[in-house]
Image (cartoon, rainbow, N blue to C red; front, side, top):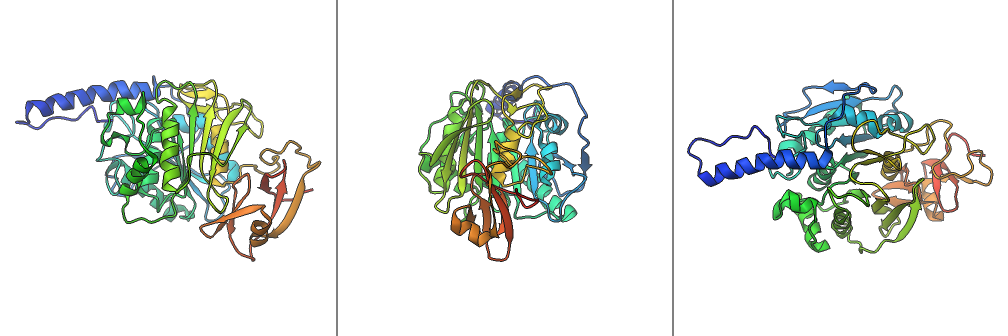
Length: 417
């Protein structure tokens, strides 16, 4: 959305002044629609502000959550808040810091403010901010570069997720920087470059119907010289969302399945979580989940969370637009291939934490792939079902995989009965 401080140069034509006034109004109205009233400040999670991370052309603020115990060369997850929110609110309620503790990843939170946009929305619809090499998109990319350099993070395992305007900006980052992000998760966001020839209002509701080929071309146009591999993409939506309507989930699916050269019919469909979330997965030829759509029943616009202390729970509902349903951040982390089980936790989807009828295999990554317990993509190995990153695809890296339920494999290197 445009900044409310935008001014018209003296002598500008009346039409330009009128347009800028209308855009300023759009900033306020659309920002409110995308995230609602500002929540009360909370400081449950300790964040570290980072300065001097780059030229920062988008004038964003960078925060980092670093777990007390972090492995060498950790993954990086970038989180983008919704309108009227900030990095602290997103950290306090999304559950991502707790997952960072369990899975051992560095959490980077980008924050925008009223100087950029009247409602503190990321400017996902402005050409000056949603293109490679400029504006807010470049600022986020510079945050990643700083995180990799300052913390020794793994540049091959960088991921991004966000809510609403942050979800739309997540799609921007995947399109503009496919060479930086391995995967992303768009929560209640929009297809990339929808506003090239449609207003933000129209894109949000009722949504814009374009062919998969058209949507995919818009992604390719964001970085014309790039030839792949393309980031894997998860798409999360509440089926009662009237702010950014569920039609956008379908259009996002069309965009990213077409980018990957896949049909728009899911390879497999199942239900997950405590509320029967419908999960559609679109698999590449090597068995990797390239695109995933998670349609959450009975909720509107916001981040699905599931407060509690259970292994499948995370987040809190203490701020607007964090909705009690399913721990979406947990499933997103698993989609990224991050091990969210944590020390002593039951494996994801494991109905028998004691290990009762679970089967285990210890073998090289190559052998796991050959046996169907894992898949290979881009030189790396991913556990079938959980999608956890097992490292390089070769005969030298060895892991133990636990199967429970049947067909769902998760890392169990710490021991498997």
